[in-house]
Length: 149
Image (tube, rainbow, N blue to C red):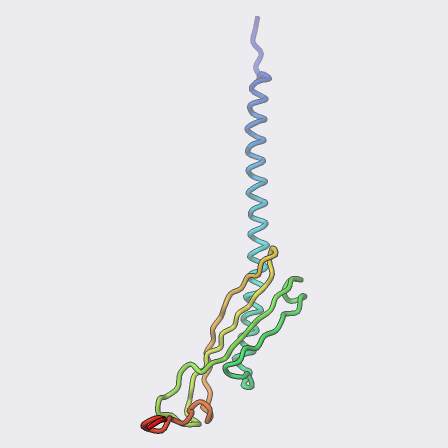
């Protein structure tokens, strides 16, 4: 009896099983990569919106100090999801003996939030801008000796 060249049924079953395991692993990896790419695109879109909003806030000289202002992004800009922002401008640095008209530094804190997978996600940016001091930046000092004396 002469043996023919080729594969036996058992060898074919083992090869098919190995191939099936590799294909399942590959599909799982592709699925994970697609989810990560979608998440990164979403995050990148929101970073661009945050940069644009921060630039607007840095240029807005009417932005009230020490008050929180907020708003929502247009769903067309945020990829269809709900997203918004919250900002606060505070006096960051001033000359200790300065007066109105001197240069001071304001800090603008911007939080950008969005809804993803039923959870609220957010990140914060900070920006600084210089401006001329106003009278409110240098409140009057308390009288020497204080009250009650």
